[in-house]
Length: 123
Image 1 (spheres, rainbow, N blue to C red):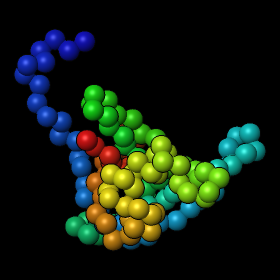
Image 2 (image 1 turned 45 degrees about the vertical axis):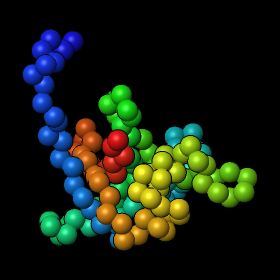
Image 3 (image 1 turned 120 degrees about the vertical axis):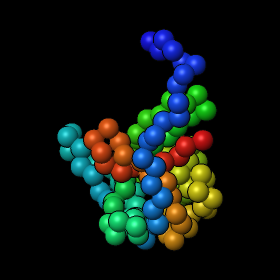
Image 4 (image 1 turned 30 degrees about the horizontal axis):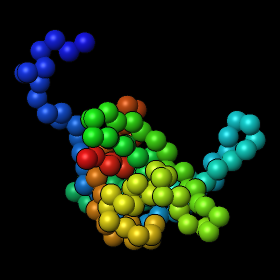
């Protein structure tokens, strides 16, 4: 329980701005011999000269509660991205109509609890 919330400051979370170089799908096998596809966003941190593959996203709601979720590729019967999917939320947040529109965009990324970078949707 927070006892002194009036003196709390803004988080110093390490938000990085990365340029999207490429996007591809990756097949992921599950323990029950099933599989699904994940979107992988290839990003470059030009300042540090490092490439990152990002396949999860940090979603933060208006209540400030955040969670890391996978960028699972899901389509409807018309072969469109499901509008409530994590991929669709990422596209909308960065003003993209298609997955290809991400290429060349700058996106925010934050480290997750294991220090892997994940894309950020922070409202």
